[in-house]
Image (tube, rainbow, N blue to C red; front, side, top):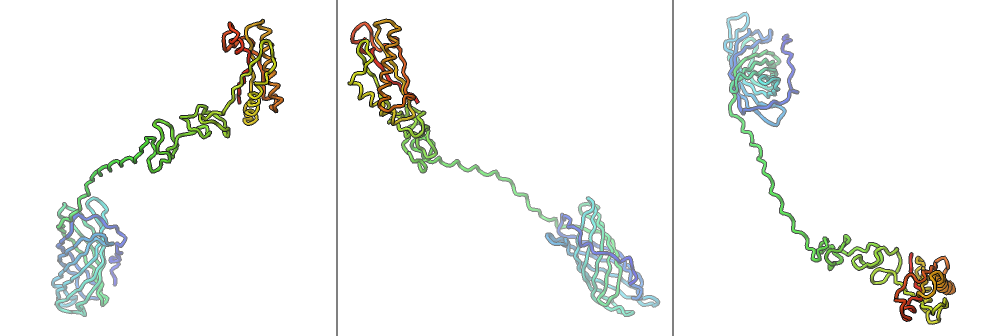
Length: 362
């Protein structure tokens, strides 16, 4: 084998280029350059190839063809023979420009000699090669390639050709799916909420909450100060944590009003039970302190009455201390005649104004 020019590698790494047609038919004209030891002269040939484009494989065309070289002369004789070659190739094409592609091929075939001369016998062969294709128009391509054919007996031929290929059978490309805007899902029906508090019946642990009140995640009315009385009924919404309250959320209180005789600061025995009730309350609710406010009627001077009212408040304070209340929780103040609760024009009214009242604060 002396033709270094046939050192043509397979183009197996070429990527598949896009094909716009299914079939291709290519009439060709070319020549054959036999190895010197075959004792055959170079010859012209003509042929016809038929290709089928393939998708989704490492190659992108199967090619079948026939080439005929008539009257191939045997060197140094007057003899000649016809050579006909049949072949099937796999072709891989790579687009290098908008109209130009390179391709590689590999395949097998059979060559038949009309007369088997100079030890040239009909035989199978393998071949490989490369070529170039140029699009003259959308329906006509110019192709040229060179192939190295090696018979099963080991003889070599260099085959070259040029031809015009006619693509046909345009591939049907699937139409792109039309976008169909999905119909909006109908809005789900709201879960029933019979008491209208925003918590569905299935989660509502308090299904009969009054309209308009604030509820928690379970549909129960809020109790902001955690005293056990819901906000809508709580008249004392800021009760300290842990303090016992009554039905309206307030700490139960006691009313103390100790009445005094005219110009006296002595506590009558009939009021001791009420003072004891205040002492018990202060013992139970240690967060509270008591302020004792003393008052008088309008008889006498204002300065004297202020001293008298303070003495009355201090007398009640002393009684609470005697009942076990720390004096730090008790304060006393005298208001004299300045805060009457009744008229000072009658004896009855004046008797109501001679008093001590208790006020509680935390």
